[in-house]
Figure 1 (tube, rainbow, N blue to C red):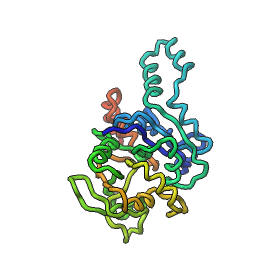
Figure 2: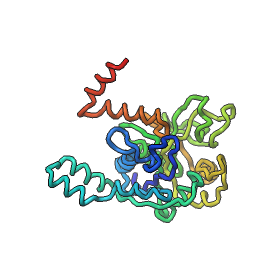
Figure 3: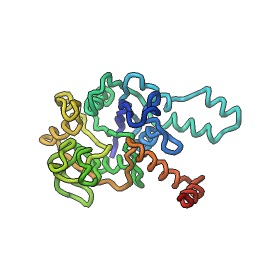
Figure 4: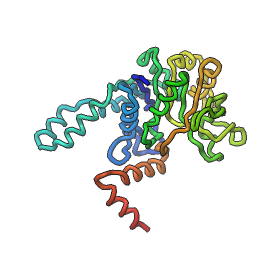
Length: 286
């Protein structure tokens, strides 16, 4: 398994978190002590990647600052003897090679990924959505790359969701080829509840071949009047193997306020410094 690049779209408006996201991209909202986007970059690195391409919107290029060196801050921390914090700041800047491209208009996830075409080149690449917050012993993106190494083509992460929620997701149908791997035969974006082929919903991790860029460029608008990645992946089924991985781990939908709170509580419970105290606090609540 070898790959270099992960694409992370960060161009969404984050309207469900207003007014917090009026000046702060939703991907920079914190889960405990780090922004969502940093967790995503760390997962990409843990899975073996060395390079991240952020797809930003006009006015959101500030997300790059989080991953850039800050000589003034570093000098101040050094002068004040805050060496541990200095190392934290430096480690963020050295996580990965991070660059950005811009999606000039909100034309959907598929269009956002298409903007990374020149930056990615002709190699397979990962795609992550930071607001799908995943906790797993083996990084979920790595779980997908392992399947890609065996089968090639497209690999998507899936999770079983309550049937009444299938209309919120892209949904796959297919046949099981391993304990948690399916060969995908079809997929549909946000189906009507009564028409969903399964309850296996695509969540925010993908491994894609470079060929997907050409397919995206030929994909028209779909649900919501936007270019949908699921529509392009469905078109690719006729020429590319496609597999879905029912990943091992926990998922929190940090695109919702409740999910963000859940993720924050879960990470805080696991923290080696305050976890014990925080769990006691939770136990004392009515």
